[in-house]
Image 1: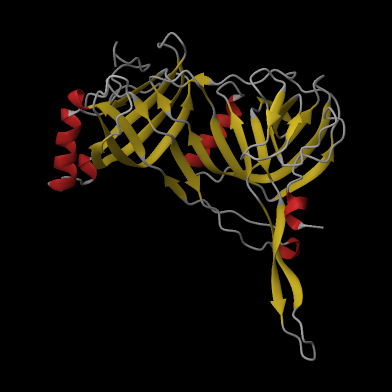
Image 2: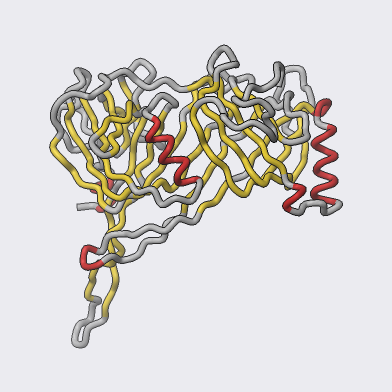
Length: 353
């Protein structure tokens, strides 16, 4: 059997999903909760009712999409006397990352797992991915053990966008096993709702960020080298975190402070720890007052300042400030600490910011 074909089966061999096997190894629910296309493009179309994430035995909420989790092992060649061919044996078993798209309405344990990872805790989780038909009847379950978050992506926020936003979360598991599904989805087959990506505010120490019109997607990676564990040849994890670039688009007419900071921090070399800043990205409900979540950035510096491509209808000039951060945290709800970039407690941003 072709290895690639075998690995495409992820959540896909169960019967009953309206007669369509998930042969591409990915499931995505449409906004109407009807038909999804396989992630990555070029895959076959299939139908499914809904999918949920479990941590432990507790339902965490609906997933927008899920893929990955394949098992594989590298083939090692061994020369043996008297043979004109190599003997082959397998190295340790490894599993591809499982990739989830989630909204901001899952149970808090999910977001605590993300933030624990971002703050250097080796947060291992057991759980399952559960798939159901259009009636909510569970058709298949994939149990995982000792899973560690390996990557989180906060989607781009754009003042001109009306698209819903979803977090992308990848995790690596020590084992992923098929299990017989039964019962009903805890939350039914309703698709998760994303947040409106135009409902955001960005703030940073000592600079006017009120005119920021776009924050590019922000990614946090957790490299976890694989090590052989006993005779099972299963992977073991150790965290090594990498926090990605923060790219902000600002009208050039409102960016003088940013240009001055770039000159001071990059050109003049005033970039010691004391010169770094704290910042925050707030994600809001439609009233632009109620926090859904916030990303807190620490030890922020500027690394590049350049013109943005012309993209507005009136040709308004914009610039992009490229920032680094040494670490970040992700939290649901309203920030609870005063001082710094947010002087009130709880944190309420000034009007227009």
